[in-house]
Amino acid sequence: MDWETWGALAGLFLAAFGAATLLPFQSEFVLGAMLAAETAPVGALFAAASVGNTLGSVANYWMGRFLDRFEGRRWFPAGPAQMARARDWYRRWGVWTLLLSWAPFADPLTVVAGVLRTPFWLFLALVAAAKAGRYAAVIWLCGAVSWC
Image (cartoon, rainbow, N blue to C red; front, side, top):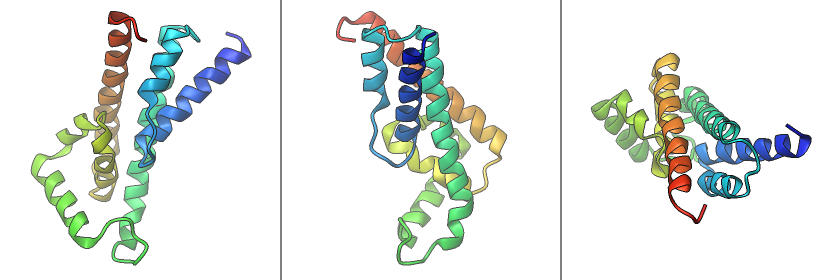
């Protein structure tokens, strides 16, 4: 691969990483555009998106591991009621909710998983499967329709 392809893959990786955080990114559109333009081999695009998105969730997890000590401070991003709801929801549905981490609304779940000290290996396995599944679906859809 040439430098231009590596640069494109790095851009996709960063878009996917950002999309997994609480930032408003949409990496699926970036992936679809790159598939349409045949920027890089499909496998490389899949790997860059999946790994980037998974590592973005890992960053959320570690943020959650260390963020809870600041709960209750004025600048903390969630109020006590929001944190209690998130904890209750996560405890009720368990670690299996991490299989929803592919969905845009589920990024806070990866933070809560860190706050509640979900074993890292289990977190990583569930999130990686969910993220890879999402990008596999995007690639499949782009192959099945002509607008990608």
